[in-house]
Image (cartoon, rainbow, N blue to C red; front, top):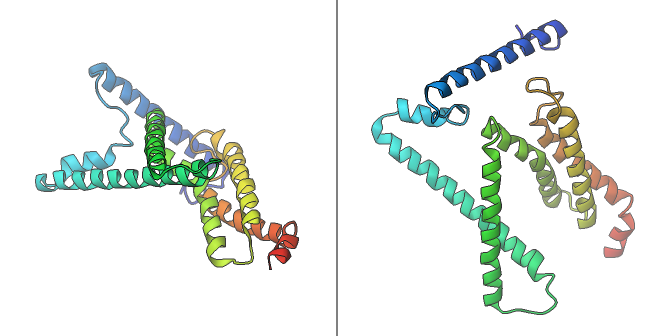
Length: 229
């Protein structure tokens, strides 16, 4: 009933009170656990899946499933670092060099950028552990940026009359707007009282990027389109 009548202010207040009470009980339980054993892990939200694997799956499948998860994580991490390093070395470093270098020089530069982005990823992981729910943190960060990226790809594949400058400026404006929306509608509010669900940022970012790029192309960059044609 609380979920069905969430717009009712009385029930909404009751739901927030229940959520707050639940959080207080969980915090109290964590304090009791730490008093019994200081080395105990009390952040249970990020370990539900692993707890299920270790305690409920047959022993023959536990090692296999954990190996699959770890190998998939290592594969995606390696491909991400490789893409970041290659893009940084070719599109930024090489393009801004005044003189041509050897292939070995660019290879060493790519290795350095791989190391650099690896350090950035490690720092991000260290900061991420400070948050209560790591899975939710990853989804929030993704929702902030995924919408804009999706909008860029949709324009590039399906809306051919929009050129590079229009999509660049629209993506920049959209990203700044999404950050502002996230701060004033989600970040400053306690958990459960946000004015907007963070998953909506994906839809808003993609739609705003497409619409804004079309408007910019039809107005400010219209003369540029005529020159190119």
